[in-house]
View 1: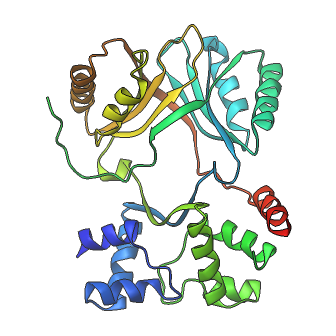
View 2 (view 1 turned 135 degrees about the vertical axis):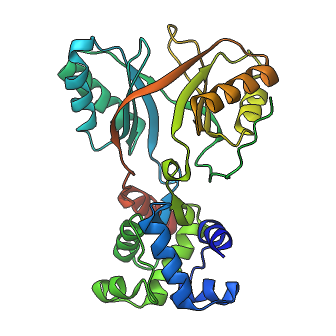
Length: 150
Length: 169
């Protein structure tokens, strides 16, 4: 039941006042069993949350991947300044000449540009923006397959 | 749009977590002084308009066993960017695949996020992509340290304003 439940929770979550009862009816089990299993999956950390994923572009948000080349001795401080921005959702140091990479999401392209300019003034590091031109895949739900064609 | 404030509040709520209980929208309905049916219909409307890309359980990749992750950027073959990007996107271990505008000193336009269970599997995926696309000029960027990873909480304010203007036209 776990596997089928997980699939339904991800791909066919019922829009209803009592969604877990609907799931139970479809699976032919009790609502209590569904709720028990969902709680278990949450506790185990398999499910992060149940809710909505917003399409940022649909509401006019501008997102871009940014990178910069920071002198090693300044990396922690610059990373901290970058992370402090609410517009930054992901921020990682990486083993490359461009050693700090982060994603920026702002209500408009202009707003994003202003944030980057302010960040450059604050840190003295040049920020490079690499906005997406095409998207081929986003937010994949993971299949538990381990097949790689060699 | 029936009620702008209500829509805004519901949009804020559903970007968080819905409790697995018999009537998960009951507390919010009480708080917003509306019915649970109102909330469900707002969610349905936002989904129909494509504002909500997906509604349901969001899984945690790490917990599912994918512990070895890397960003791999590839030099896209001129004129074959789409074909190549789609080929890369087809791999189950590739979660994100984009063509990006890049600076002159980083000529790797195709970005993939690859999730694997081990360093060997990651290398296997990279090798498989090299073989199937013919691209052997790429950069593997391993994350050294994670400084921040959060879900963005979007404000629907601007979108609701634009929607209002469109409706009153």
